[in-house]
Image (cartoon, rainbow, N blue to C red; front, side, top):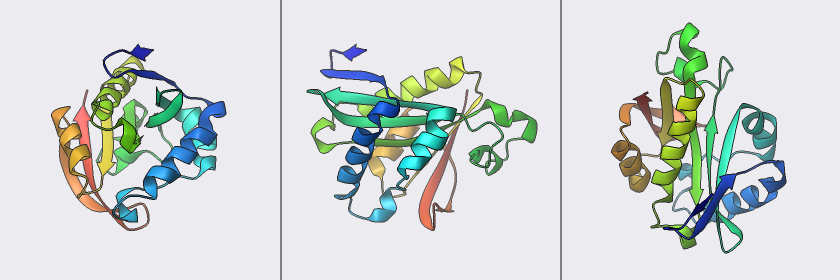
Length: 173
């Protein structure tokens, strides 16, 4: 799908795109003010979990991957954040998790994170989900603003991902 407003091609990513995704993730992460701001995933996680239990969307600018965003459907797996938010066991299959969104500096300011939020919410609804969850570093003000503007509410703050502070957000669909 081409987004004329942003002059970007946005499409679902697959196995063949993982090298570009990992390269972008490492590149953007290398310039963050603190490594605590991002919980980096290993390539195996994308292959073994995300591509089987979710969707990844990428935004291409000038033919190069400039941003990506991850949506997972954790069902009853150990990766399901619904348990931490108090979702009943019989409702866990209705949970979707907005995982990482990474945007290269060259593509920032184009509303990509909001676009990805809306796309992932639409896909979650189409997949029968009733709950959306997301986590964000407390100092990531742009992401916090974007989550809250899309109707997410702060549920709690705690250490996650190996001791990194995270605000935990929820939206009921």
